[in-house]
Length: 394
Image 1 (tube, rainbow, N blue to C red):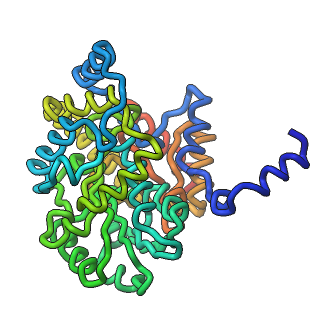
Image 2: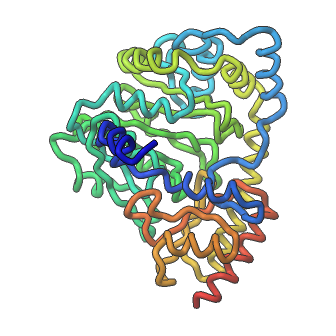
Image 3: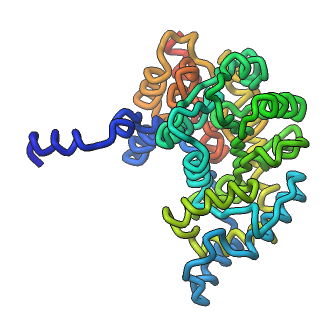
């Protein structure tokens, strides 16, 4: 395409899209994918294969011809399984036929929830550092993203006082992600109840992304949706990607009041029609027979968590002990490099890929995200290389 034509096309692209940054995670992933010598601590991708019996369920679905559209809401047997799972696992009570929508991953759930709820100019509180898509999703839905900084000295906990400092009459939503990507922080029951009281007082809808709920290591997960008075104002989001290592099957779900499910379903039906039928059949199998798989993977992640956290401590690199998800978020400000400079040099000099903290918001400056969803052998070698690198910096 010639230069003038290229400029003409660019001038037609929506400003809100032109102004969106590329994902800092995916930029590093593209580099890693071109080199065989790199140890990647970058992508939040379980190194486990999807358990064989779950894969078999998807394959068998295809073999028996289950390749047609399902209900826009998703297979009824899957929604019934999700209702049962939510009750047993999270103490959440939802009706399969009215309050559950199966989506193409939690990413779609977040997108359609934002679009169903936001009018132009509505403000959304969200905590930083946070997953890379939250602020862009808010912007694309016409909202105004309002970050609330969490800090290492507070174990990256979100507090009511921090939220009170940012809420305004224009605030409509509060977006939460606990266990947290990238920090590994969790929302314990006391904090959840405190934040729930804040949401009720200010009449906010809470979108709670709990994709890592099963991956907590030292205590059971507590959902803010289970606090009395919160079910009717919470959009509970969860999925299969992390818990059952089903990232590529793109299967998530959202639970919410019937009126909101109906609004989200209308967007969903025009956008994607329904989630993949073979993936939904795999989800049914995961719910029925996947508990042992979850336990084994969680225990493996816990072992890796303990090792990577101890390694950073022994190097003198500050890092909170991750309580959930599968990420460590070490602080590297002491070395006099920006997060991007540190990550780039670590990649170039030691062939270890980690994500600059600024990929997760401005408050991520001075940190790296290191995923321990890779093998222990790889983590051990990565920590050895990391230590060698910082010794040279010192």
